[in-house]
Image 1 (cartoon, one colour):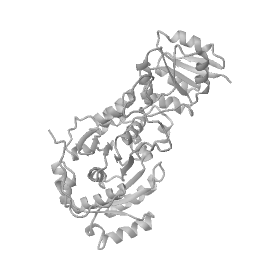
Image 2 (tube, helix red, strand yellow):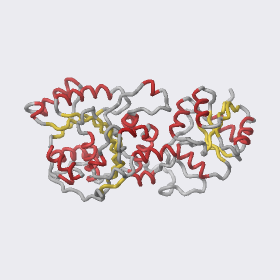
Image 3 (cartoon, helix red, strand yellow):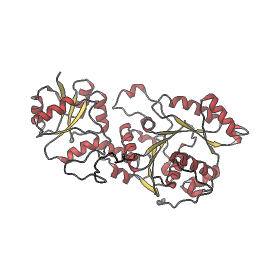
Image 4 (tube, helix red, strand yellow):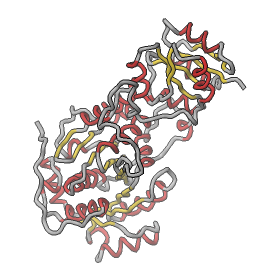
Length: 431
């Protein structure tokens, strides 16, 4: 069965390339697309098996490539001989298979007929160096039995239901405590409803953040070095990728971009802490339309990528009821087993012996055990928020800070700190 190829190439060499491809055995050109919209329409209609695209195709980004693959169309990059920059750009977009105008016919046949949407690699942007190009980081070490696997950072998603149970407060201070334990951390604000990490850490709203990273990802220019520049270093070993300044910009943070940002963060730090928005509802109709942005795509992508999920609920009747329902809701989406965290624990809202009461309620109604309890410390949180600092800086002796430090130590697999730990000096202050 012949492989049908859809082409979308540079106008000055498209004709000669199409002529060569159309004469290959077992290959036929199904459509010569004039632009990206034409290519996406042809893919949606099932007119091709492989898309042959060039880097100068206007509008080509990661979402477009995801659309092609979602419709069963594999993607192969094409460029003129000697155009290493174009090949590099396509590789950064995630296109790993590439041919040139001078590629031998036998190799063209092999690439086009053996490529399927399932087999064509789709990487996050690091890629392999081009021939004759130095690697972007350390020199290549020959692989032996003793060669250790590259270390990948662990992703911790902090999520909880609506009602401000303390997701951002926990995410910010958890990242701070992990950094204090000697673990490099990147905190990413993925709350597209009410991003607050920049305010909590007194980082200027104008600082580039997730919107800039997502834009670079869509354009195929995001790599480890550029992400490191976008991740503001607020303290030793503590970087922050700030969120969108207003909820109306949620369409800029698409799933494919978030996926690449998280994957690159794994190479940037030992821990990646994700501050997620509350919404995880997914429009089933839109989920089949890969070109339409989904309102909760950032959070759903974060939960899917996470190694650990901290489910945060407030210690009051309303907050606990929402937490019970949240356990059921998060079980319906791709995510790790949640680790429950009950915040603002106090007798005034749940009665005497609050720890026992909450534990019994969660076990009975949600089947949750091994709950992490965070005490109510409004004075400490107020001091930290007012100063734009972490609890370690503004209220080092806070009982809430000590509880979060113990949680961080457990995640890092080290002994919990004993006694009061002095706050750490900030690298960045509000201008």
